[in-house]
Image (cartoon, rainbow, N blue to C red):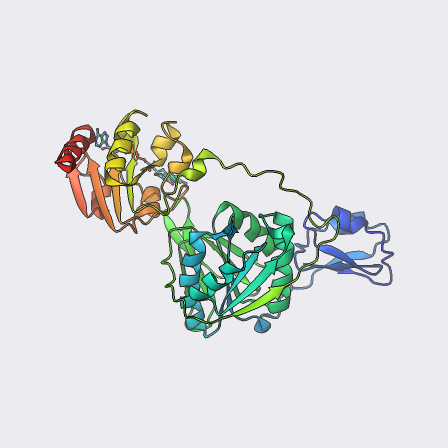
Length: 393
Ligand SMILES: Cc1cc2nc3c(=O)[nH]c(=O)nc-3n(C[C@H](O)[C@H](O)[C@H](O)COP(=O)(O)OP(=O)(O)OC[C@H]3O[C@@H](n4cnc5c(N)ncnc54)[C@H](O)[C@@H]3O)c2cc1C
């Protein structure tokens, strides 16, 4: 299906613009123009008083994808600091760009964060598209979407990668709708089809019970969000050279519909599972919230942090910010202790790439032992104090 505006009949009343739930219609003079984010829902057809909009059976519009090139990474920054997932995406983006034979670029929005352009180049970006504006100082959906959408329209990236952070998960879908393209969320693996050079985006599906590989064959850019902690970080080379291209978006009244009045950091943001070298996670086997006191003491001795399974979170023993797994955080510490955790596939999805996995479980047949490097069969309330005693010695 497609939506067409009959130019001779359109009077420029703009009723269709108000009716469109996808913000897909703009005015060119007195003529309504249907944009790429149109889903052919037909809301505009119904409200047009002049019968100037029609729904036709025309085949789905297929964009000219040959003009698109390069791999882009959204360089998410907060308070002038790049998020660690950006460095991971640059690492992955470099592999993809090499396979396709194109350039790796970063797109950076902010105010006076010029030093980050050098950091991005040192981590592998050949080009950095940089929008330096007061409106972009802190993340704002409208301002960031407009800036990046305009850059995409002008420079036409083939692939756009974003971190599956709160910001990436907000920005990604907005951009995908505006560009009229697809977005695969929460990818755990990306690779290039050797035959047609298209991006293969793999993510867990059906509750993590199988992995789905998704392609975006007819629209560009091919867009993915990737969870922090999944991909390997790009190498740093301060001698790398790259190009910085200034973006100069303009904002008129009404373009930015929300204003950031204050930023209040929640306590949960202080949990940095993705950066931790050592994680001591507890599950239903703890038997109650007091079990986390023991784990905190253990983690402190090891210089690590505490994590949790969903069963422990769902029981209300610990905040969701600590949850490791498919619907929690994906982690890759050097050392991961799974204490009283059975090893459900959804938990494994978030920690199986850890350097060393040590499982403590009183059931010798618990599936966690299948992926553990070291397994201790026993009651965690006896095993952990015994380990701590040894550490004290
Ligand atoms: C869509 C979906 C998404 C999900 N996302 C996640 C996710 O992100 N993260 C996640 O963790 N789960 C997730 N789950 C839930 C997951 O399927 C499991 O239910 C959950 O991981 C089980 O947690 P657990 O291992 O702590 O509890 P259980 O499976 O109940 O295991 C408890 C373990 O503790 C052991 N134990 C008991 N007492 C002791 C003791 N004193 N000492 C030593 N061992 C003891 C038992 O032998 C047992 O193996 C998800 C499920 C679905 C359907």
